[in-house]
Length: 313
Image (cartoon, rainbow, N blue to C red; front, side):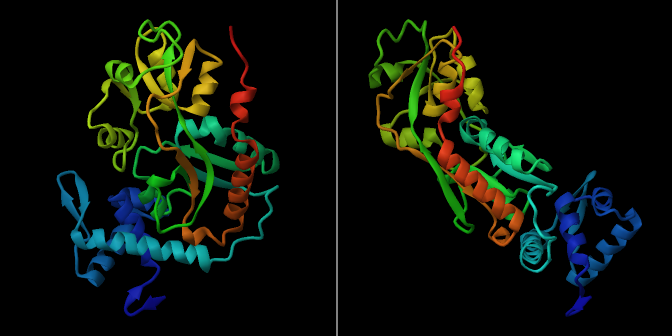
């Protein structure tokens, strides 16, 4: 089908070519021959009067025109998929689908793992692909490469719908044998003199350190930076380090490891964990059902993971 001279069938090919930036990889993904994919690229170049993909050494890079086209083409395809293409009638008991969710290991421990377990009891053939938020979550959601993002609201897009899951506060955590913390309280001056473990997994966006410097005019003495919340306790035990951890996660690990939880010596704003999805998925029956299951289960059971954890001597 042509629209104003453009073969609309080529839009899917264009999206794949610009995403993969390789004729061979795009051909494999589209289940086409390399010659057919190369021919499609030639026709696209003729229509747009632009190279779209240019050879640079052994790789291909997008031209400025291609960079403009990629989000627009992806947006059109997502809108068609979400509003026009008719899906089979949804039955969660037999549904087979991959559900991609961006979430930190903290979110998995605090809420998502239990919610997914409950969903799987109802919908055994759903496959959940849990993705660490190392890349920009907004871009992955915008490109339709994930179905959900479960993160604090300050990292989410204002262009897509979202739902509040729960709020969380912080605790300072140290090893029970830490000789720099003699009591169950810690002052701000003591806190600042200690060496810290911090988590940083995002390539861009607001950071806790940015807030801390703005609030107190100084940096903490950071000794270890990790990309995973669940590694923090292991970097604290048998050391004199300290870390700020989400309260629910600190409670889980304090029941399993020799850790002491302290109230932070400063007021730290709560974080508001939020579930977000692409606006074009509003009418997707399967994703709507999963969304409601996640929101309702977490609302009813948040914090239960910490309570149910076994206590170790």
